[in-house]
Amino acid sequence: MKTQKFHKFWLMITAIVVGSFGPVFSLATNIETSGWASWTLDLLSWSESGTHNFEAPTTRFLTALTGGFLFGWGICIFCLRQWVFDKAPNETRKAVVAGLLAWFVLDSTGSVASGNAINVFFNILVLLIAVGPLWKPARD
Image (tube, rainbow, N blue to C red; front, side, top):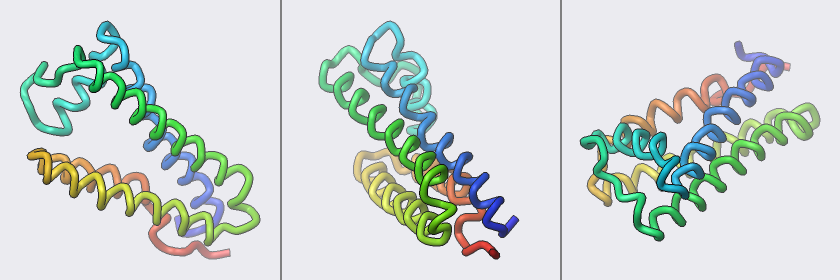
């Protein structure tokens, strides 16, 4: 599990984990298709169903931005896996882990500040899944 081949495989898992949130949030730009994003936010904030207001244009705009960034970040991880990893496996691994840690710190801090501290628990789960074996360098 600590081989470069397995790390390259795991980068695909990481790309899917990160990128899969993109379409979910992008769908919330339209009220009729905001169900998955609303459900996700209810889960991540451990709140009652329907407490998020997707009728506000600012919320829909924010979900468009969030969805775009998350999907783009997932594609970036996939491209690093495809085009960079074989040339610089350890550097690719460190770049992806650094990005995940930066996301974790900022997202978790913002979650606590916004009164949604429970999301830190979910962030820990996502971080553990996304980083997986990438935490340590692989054998050649």
